[in-house]
Length: 105
Image (tube, rainbow, N blue to C red):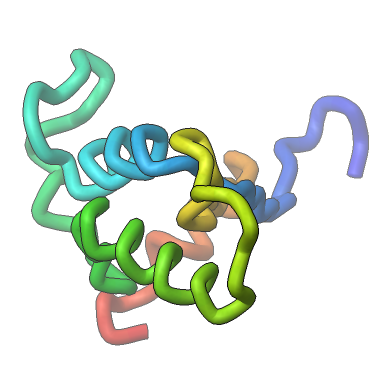
């Protein structure tokens, strides 16, 4: 690949998130609420939910339940990580590859 050739690179970034961050990310991912100007409303029907995202209260309950199994000596911090969030990105040259896929693929 040369410096002028578009990239076909695909990357995946993941990180842990506390409840508030997870709530914000969930709303963003599911397009809940006001949509930013850069969102093409004509393409929203192309979005797919691959994994059902639980409500923040449910994911926090699950994190607390898993934590209790270790019998912690302290209470869970308010900013403790309760979820893992991520994004898949790809270069401009990879876009036609994904556009050629059917929704079932």
